[in-house]
Length: 423
Ligand code: NAP
Image 1 (cartoon, rainbow, N blue to C red):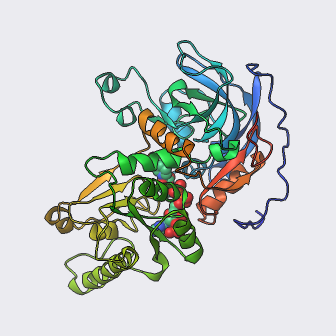
Image 2: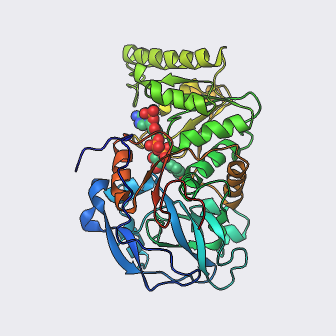
Image 3: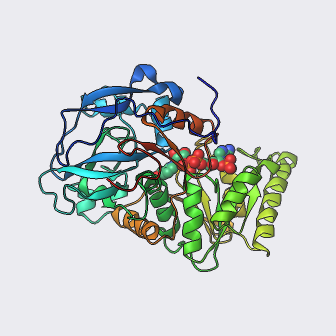
């Protein structure tokens, strides 16, 4: 693969076989898609290939959206690798017939067809899709449970097929929210998955929701989740303290509203600490964690610990997150990018009444609340780079190697250029 730089200007968006949108409501029998197949599992740059496939049709409660732009998320890095979950095999075990995966869990586009019983959206609506799917007849939901925690909940375009790396995507109609009119199609495709996830983490776990003047530590502040988290914390009057590797990323966080940043590359106490019975080694780990805590105080300007720690690196950072979290505070986590075996020193957890809370995507209300913040201009999608349809693999490769630009990325599908707002 040719060497790619995250910030290199794109030569020219290649449209390849992509054509003009068909007349509104006219659904062609086949469509182009960037497809993952099991024999290509591996490095994302090689895992996706353009194919012509049958266009799906909406069933009851569903809508078919002509994709103008698609967002890039880490979940389709995992899908491309085929691990930790082989998403194609997983679906085939429960009856799916397709032996391929069309990923993509963020989209902006135009509704082209709706299935039976759909009233909330109509053909021609300009929409953004959130990625939470579930069975509305799921007994857990019927009994009043939060749908995103239901046994039937799935992430569209990762756990389900027919995501947004295609000319048409199949969604459940409840996933659709109005596209903020001030945004171009690519920016509108860039924020929902990460933004709504961050919103639930920061606003969904009472009593640990962001309040005025709360210090909130945001890991990966310049990343997809982090850039949304910083802005949400600010919008609620909190004090976001970002973690970033290096000055450029850190300054991006400050420009977004972070009070400052801690450069994690100055520390080396990461990962699972040595057994607490090895007193000398454990003391060395604790010294690193204490220094990290002091770096947070320096940003805040006083000795205040974060009431909320916004976590996703996981294995490398959880011990530190638990350590620096304030008494009676919460570490809220939605991923384990660096690994899944996180060590928690239970002494800090119980003696200081700290909470370790899992969180996964969002429900319809939380996605709508995040969309309202974006529509009001209080949260920016932070779109920093747009790729052509034939560059889906390259965009995911950059993400896999942590060489992607700060903020978020999008893929042009129906849209011709990064600024296009009209249809
Ligand atoms: P991203 O854009 O790649 O940002 C992640 C950031 O984490 C990077 O910018 C990097 O910033 C930081 N990071 C990387 N390695 C690290 C390490 N060893 N220690 C500390 N920080 C490190 O990815 P994202 O879109 O924010 O997603 C992050 C994770 O959350 C992924 O695993 C994704 O699958 C998951 N996720 C889960 C949900 C959910 O609903 N459960 C939703 C969205 C995302 P620095 O190098 O500057 O520190």
